[in-house]
Image (tube, rainbow, N blue to C red; front, side):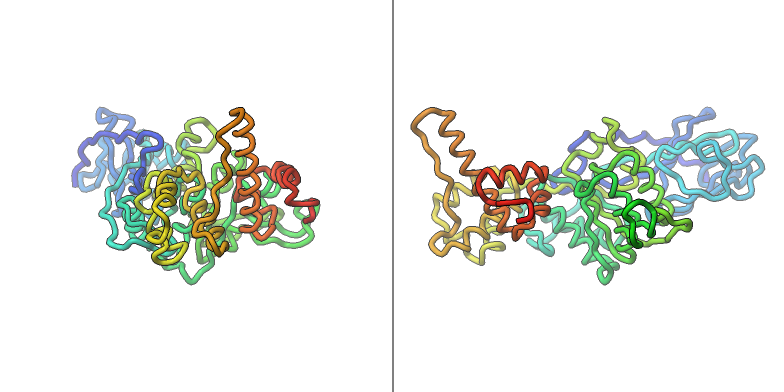
Length: 436
């Protein structure tokens, strides 16, 4: 074989547009030559073994005196790329350290003798034909973006690749994860869900990796972390952007090595878990701002899917109303109410719609619940304040009903600080004490 011809390095897509409309953004992997007259040449890494050396039958031919005839090979193993030195004279280095076998990490410098290449993952959008179905598991929609999403999930579910799901609260990231799990070879294994924003930084390491008895004050027994509990199945890490920077390298190493260390343990524990992560924020923007590690970002975003907010796919409203409220409900709604539904921005997305319909069907004389009282006469500020108070009380009442009075769950779903939620509940007389 001859050297791969130079190809342009793809530009990282614009933040927020990588997977817009339900399209898939998939990582493409390259080795970029940094030295010799061919510096800048890009060698794509695919599913086949890539052989590097100065002999003409290699996939990548490096004509340099420090490069052996058959120097090394790069072998893909799932989401990872294994470098194996083939007994070269001048050795193979990874980020300056000589290795016989090692896994590449994003941005790593690979030394082939005195010739350097950089391992460079890039994201690129992938077009996919929409599914012919209008539902997949708990996901519902006949709009093109939703049917593209169904096709994406069906395509990537059989793989073990990590998936990053982006989208606002209530857009269906949890339902998408359930579909990924149920359509995967791991469907008979556990689906474990952990919200990275739900516990303090002091406890999150134990929640992820587990601990042994006596590992710290209060560790009265052994605890198995969620990475280990999801062995043989899928782990959903919600709000991954909330993971503390100091814990991110440990998570990255665990995912790379498929091993974890419980706190206080001397020996590692192997695990086999498929990882799905979610974020309401643009995780690439968080990376660029220094709030999330780039190497962990690339490890988690082998596939990236953005779920659209409901306001951008309102053609799905009739189908959703029928799915949540009963077949034919949309057609039975008064025309004025349908107009209100179509005109509403649905800041809580599908979750808000589901809750609204659950509340509506619990009232025998109302198909969609009562509208909040609005006064249009009197001082603007007074009318506005009254409407806000009515909204807050109604929202909190429905929230408590939906969460069956579980304050911790209510705080998570409302994305409110627990103390602030308590203050609101006391304000409207909805809770008497912290123990209620």
